[in-house]
Picture 1 (tube, rainbow, N blue to C red):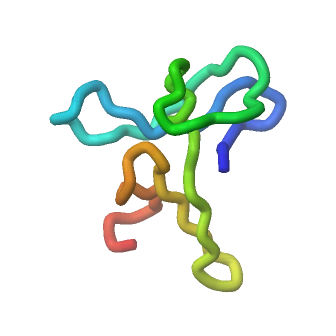
Picture 2 (spheres, rainbow, N blue to C red; picture 1 turned 90 degrees about the horizontal axis):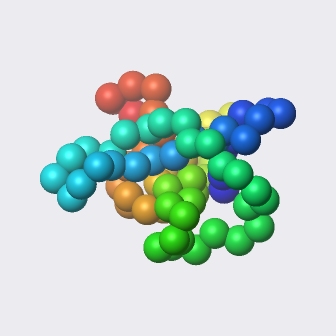
Length: 78
C-alpha cells in the first residue's frame, strides 16, 4: 500500500541516505499519477510502498517494501 495525506500529493516514504544509515520515515512529494510502482523504481517511488498486515481486530502493521524488517510503529516495544 501507499500511505498518503488526503487532498495532497504527499506520501510517507521509508528511505535512507546510504547503506550504512538507518532508514527514516519522511513525507515525499509526488508529481503525477502513481499507477504502478516496482521495486527499483527510477523515481525512487518504491520507498512509498508498505506491506500491510492485519494483526488483530483493529491493529495493522506496515513494513517497508524497500527496507524489509523496518516497520511503522508507535513504540520500540512493538
